[in-house]
Image (cartoon, rainbow, N blue to C red; front, side, top):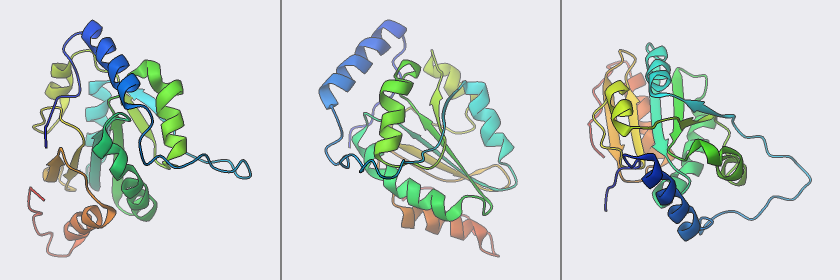
Length: 195
């Protein structure tokens, strides 16, 4: 699998790349058809987060297990795992697990791309658009080694250390639940760092 950074180093290049990606990718191939108008879909709130706020949210979860996912609407493996994260969140939310979701989509696409995406996939958890001009600013703030490839998922143990991570591939609800359950076990066994 080819890994690539999600953030270009200058704003003009970033805008051009986003336009190409959105125009070239179109709607995800497996996007569900629009729901019948009988019941409104409730989705998580979409907000913006600076690199400092992202670090603060991760640190605020210390004492619980923190699952952090970086994704984008234009990233096919990210799209594939969204329903899995929704299942995981519905099962583990409020049970000693904090789930943080950060999208690499541009802030200007919040209403036109991100919120419709959240609705089409019925994503129940909040998503934060990373308000990042320079990817190095984000790298300096994150308590993990990460090159910006998507999707990326990190699980932090209650002591704040990274217990498990995966970058560039998709994960399932069962895989994620298994890693979290290992951390919740009485022995608090270290979770292997790779799939």
